[in-house]
Length: 385
Image (cartoon, rainbow, N blue to C red; front, top):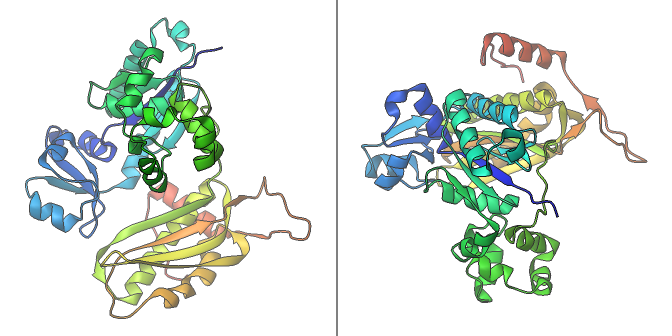
């Protein structure tokens, strides 16, 4: 049987690394990226972790408890540019790349040791060096015969110099040292159930009979077991799956109960979300909006659109009236967002027997995109939808 070698390339403290690339004076200092003055910590440098700052810590608590840390507001467009550099660099070295998030990608290195005339660990070191030289971003790389083992290896790589490889004869040792809660795909409800049955490590899990795992978790559980044992159960998918939904959310500049401010923010989110689905050639069939209160309670509502659309002007007519359903005067809100779901592609849409979906676009939206592509975001403001 052909032996596979899968690598997970994971950018280290990605948002912080991007900020440090832009401003090298931040390197070696405790730095956190936050979602705004009323938001929370979403990325930490190694030095910030050592001070005790926790991921997800509210901004007001972090500033109070760790005043010496440098806090930078998130700039997602910047991080998107750096992500594209990293992935482009990967694709230049490896033919099969599966991008799983803005800062992670699986790559299939199988047989490339012969192409590059280098052992797999040395090849991973070359990839790591190339990304640093090209994109100025540090990465950790985990190597293993399956995607799940590569994922576990990448977590360990961050503490052992940036590269960690799981060999066939070290699988048991790695699994014995891995808490079951650290296995990707094990949800909170499953972990509680496993603790009840005495399963505390990944090795405890793979030691269970197949029939018991299938009874508790179905075929997905069996796939997890054999992935952990080193079997190549899940392929590296080079063709990205079509997204089912797109959302655009952000923290408000300040806590507010002003309905006009909330409406303006939701319109801005709607334009950003529509711009993304237009770029992917998609139309949404359902639209929703969300508000998060100062106390982190989330209220939301959604509506099915009369026609699939990619135009904010059309979608706004259906979704913006929902604001009156979830807004309460006197309540302070901290963030807002728009969710576009039920995405379909006009080219690949298969109509049902008694239903033919209508698609609705707007030339004004296309013109808006062209202007922003040429002159940058926010070159014009939309106040009419």
